[in-house]
Length: 256
Image 1 (cartoon, one colour):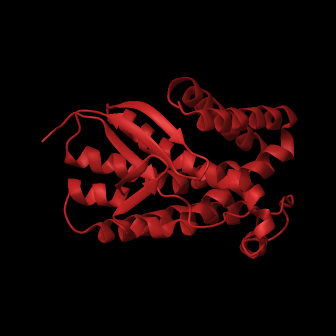
Image 2 (cartoon, helix red, strand yellow):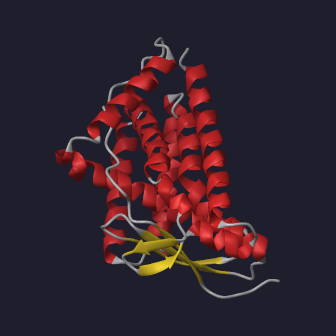
């Protein structure tokens, strides 16, 4: 049965540090597997350096933004309305949307946020294979963020953060070339790591944000459909892993 009313999807406050990655250019003649493994190992090592939290925080906020955009864009694709996106300094976020959604559409919109980071990572991995594709991807991201800035982001911190991202993207696109390709690969790696660093959110029924306590995304899926929330969390975890494997495989083929 369809129902209309404003819905809220939240992103859990991040459990820990989403560390940065060494910005070393990817040489096409290198085997992809060692390069990606080395980058991942270095990123994991940086988790143990507390002083890097200030640098890593914007990357955590970026994954929150992608998560909330996943909810909002899914709602729009299903014929609903996106009213507001909020991003808070603690790393949590919230998307407010409405629509004449049936149970399946409501569940899909809740899942859209959870699948936003892995799908974003896949797109960035695919785009990072060539400088031209990387520029196209960063240009599309810039356009999306500008639309979000003008239409949906309303809280002060969120406005400042998204505006800063837009400024950085303009600078990167102006520089262009290999730098855009490197940043695209870097963003892909960070979105990939955010899937695993926040995986506990897939197995909780409540989400605590700066806006208050609310049902988690998987709890909302379970409420709309059937089976317990942890089943949907496990299913989305497997889907996310499959999407990320596709992205890593595409990069490995391109760099052989």
